[in-house]
Length: 226
Length: 243
Image (tube, rainbow over all chains, first blue to last red; front, side, top):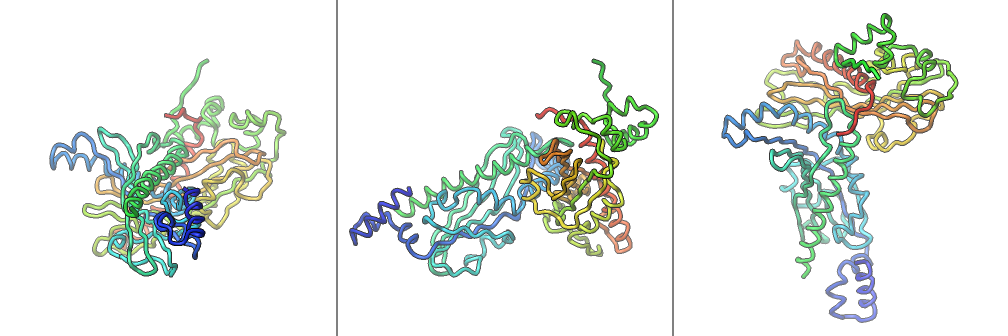
């Protein structure tokens, strides 16, 4: 990809008006100007839901499930909030090459925000969530982190991410929102068990979820550019 | 080889501790939490035998047990109709409570009073060194060496990584605390690390009426103290095979 961008930039320099440059050099052109910004927010909302065989038995079954699982689920929510606190989410995301994974212009500067956005404003607010006035501006919001345990499918961690692209204004030019999810084999830890492995697994799966999301986002962005 | 298995859990832990004086052999098998540090070092506890077989006895006064408090309490409250991650779900007439009811100062006060090293196997004679400021979670979780600049020849750390209040309509309320324990001995890297959650049920917290406020806050602090003891019980157990 980097090679493609470099070739396109070279073509744009030597062949003004070339169709090739117009199609492929959008990221390169942005990279040549002021650096783009990618603002990143961690998730505020954590949830944990366990469903067993009883959930198929109507209201009574659902009540029985709730009575059986509400305590453990509250504990898992607390464990999620601990293992994937704001600092840990940001560290996990920043350990990856976000601009490359999200197909953003090369040289995009990542700006982390430690305070999560209030969840119920995530969809409602359609303008920039930071004070930045950068002409090339993206937002990546982790909206939800959810632990699920189902009778058939087992344990998994699901994560909802949202990317927004703004032009040189407050209008959203492109938005992609999607869930990523992967299985868990160590979380939640048993009572009294060392939690290190389970907590590391949560971080690893969080990163895998993002890679899954980013892969889908790249495809969506490529379709839009075509 | 004959092995005596003692269930070290809850009150059984207290019974085991009380039996130390009367039954030293049994106490040795079950990891003596109340043994004096000097005695423990003379006997060379199993966790340090592997890496420092020829270590000379160190006066207990030179040994240090460093403790750090946790940062803000997390809330995982599930009500009948909604969930909350920012505090309790208040009923009408219930008094407002601080968002961080067991703050760093309160945790340190409890730990200084409780002297938690006394509950960890072989650490009873260690000198408690309390740090006032919580550490960032990334610093705790990413640390490979000592978190202080101490060069003590026998050194251990107990860190409150997280406090969480969990509540749901069916199981009630509880205080959960994530501790990290690292025993370095004389080394720069830990000889043993262990971390897990302690959990204590709450019956009075959060308060429903103003006149219950003081009792409920006292219960919460007592639960934090009991979480330390519960964690020490887990930490004193031999490592379990991973699932």
